[in-house]
Structures are given as C-alpha cells and as structure tokens.
Length: 424
Image (cartoon, rainbow, N blue to C red; front, side, top):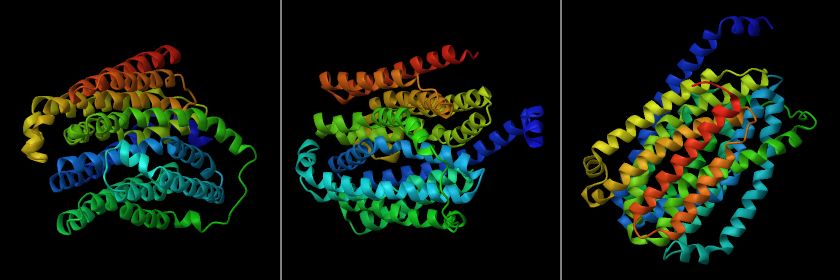
C-alpha cells in the first residue's frame, strides 16, 4: 500500500522507469532487427529472385495460418503479470497447461499440412514438396516458443526477453552463412535456418525460466480459464486481422504475379523496417498498461509517449526510403532488385501507419477495449477485396495496401479519442 501511495504521489517515478526500459529495449531489439535484415540480405543475394519470393511467401503464409494462435502471447503475458504477484508455482502451471494444449494443436496442424501439400504447391506455384514440408514442421515447433517468451515478458524480465530476440537473429544469420552461402543448399537451406534456430532458442528460454520450472505445480485460481476464454476471442480476432494486414499482400502477389514476387518481397522486407523498428516499444507498453489495469488505474501518458515515439521512428525510416529508394536497394540487395524502388516508397509509409495503429491496438487490448477491431477488420477486408479485383501490377497492390492501412489508422485513432474522451 505504501509503495502504491508513493507512486501515485510521484508519477514521474513510473514514467522514468518506463522511458528507461523503452530506451534499452529499442537499442537491444533493434539490434535484433539489424541482424534480421542482414539475414534477409544474405538470402536475397544467395537465391534467385523467384526463390526469394517463394521463401517470403511461405513465411507469410505460415504466419497467416498461425495467426489465431497469436492470442497466446497476450494471454500468457497478461496472466503471468497477475499470477506472478501471488506465487511462481501458478506461473509454472500456466506454462504446463498451454504446452499440453499446443501439443495437440501441433499434431493436428501437421496432419492438415500433409493432407494439403498438393494444394499449397499449386496455389503458391512451387515445384517441390520439400520447402512446404520444412515450413510446416517449423510452424509446429514454433508454437511453443511464444509461451516461454511471453512468460519472460509477463515477469518483467524484459532485458532477458530482448537479448533472446537478438540471439535468435544472430544464430539465424550464422546458419544462413553456413547452409545457404557456404553449403549452397538454396531455398531449402534458407527455410532450415528457421527450424534450427527455433530449436536452439527453445533451449535457451527453458534455461532462463529454470527458477519457474523448478517450482511445484499449483492449481490455478477457479474460473481463470473462463476469463481467459472471454479475453481470447477478441484478442484472437485482433491477431488474425493484424497478421493478415502484415502478410496477405505478399501471399497474393505470389499467387497472382509470381514473376514479380521477388521484387515485391524486397520492397516489403525493407518497408517493414518502418513497422518493426518502433514496434519494439510495445513490449514495454503492454505489460505496463496491463499492470495499470490490474491496479484499477489508467495512465494515458504511456500511450501518447509510445505513439509519438513510434511516429518519430517509423516516420524517419519511411522518409529515408522515400528520399533514397534506388540507392538503398542497390546497396543492400543489388541492382537486380532496383525495380522495387517505387514499391518501397509506398510500402514503407503503409508500414509506418500500421505501426502507429498497433500502438492503439496494444494499449486498448491491455484495458479490455475492443472497438478498434471494427476498423482493423474492415481495413483487412478492403485490402483483400481490392487486391482480388485489381492486381494487374505490384504497384497497384502496394497502393491498395497504403489505402487500407491509412484507413485503419484514422479509424482506430478516431475511435480511441472519442471512446476514451482523451485529448491529444
């Protein structure tokens, strides 16, 4: 009680802690983003443009399939915040329960994936089953990683969480140099880097959580799964629509314009820097907002600081890409991809807008407010519908992406301001 009273009298204490943690997270996780793009450069320069397009289309398709399970990190983080305040035995039980459930889901996904191999190969214009098989196995194994990472986040072990993310990308770069550049395993080698990296990082996360895993299992509070289920439905809708907003254009380009998919993938991979660079701030915002909600408080300053920081970081990246698109693409990916320059200019702006929208989504999810889903779902529906009818060139698809993300941001921001009656 005294601690809570002191923090209320001194709101700057929380704010300083929030800003300090954000600063460290931005540095560490954007180091991870740097290595992630080094990985993409290695793959782009080592594979033919068509194979590079297939590689990113498979990864995007996998993310879309797993999108409903994107609810798990939010649930684990949120309820770890609550349960860890009581005892770590409850956190261990939470991990154990989710591991058991995901094992069954993983088996089902593996069976479904094997049964749909021929359809996937035809839809994505792939000549071999092996790349799809590797993607399916990677997707199944990746089901378990968010549980452990979200537990670290919910326990506020954010620095450890961040270093794991950085280590993941460094390992993947090393594996890419070995499997793709040195051994020349091509598309299959590029996909295998993801599978092997997940296996290694799972072991690291288990070691970081060894103090939790050494606890005895304790029964969870009665009714907690019913509460989780009520929370899971809107969050699952959010993760599905958000994943589609991030990935569906790449998959549709591979389907409608497979000869241009490599160029579009290049622009998308670079353009998403405007999304990923500021999005690391959400790792601090969500548990902080969730803790405030659990304490019966609301501090909108956390939202607006994160929103302005996101605008600054994402807008700066988009500005650089609009000023020097040809030079950046030639320097990083090679002159064979310079046709992607007009696409990069448009997609980078779209990704910066989506990053801003994500701040609004994350803050309101922590406070059990879901009205933004109407605008997110409407924007994704518009994105898919327009691309379905208008897909003559990659440039048209990029313009449709910008239109959709712009409407999502304007609608979500307007809804938040009106519904929460806050002033900018």
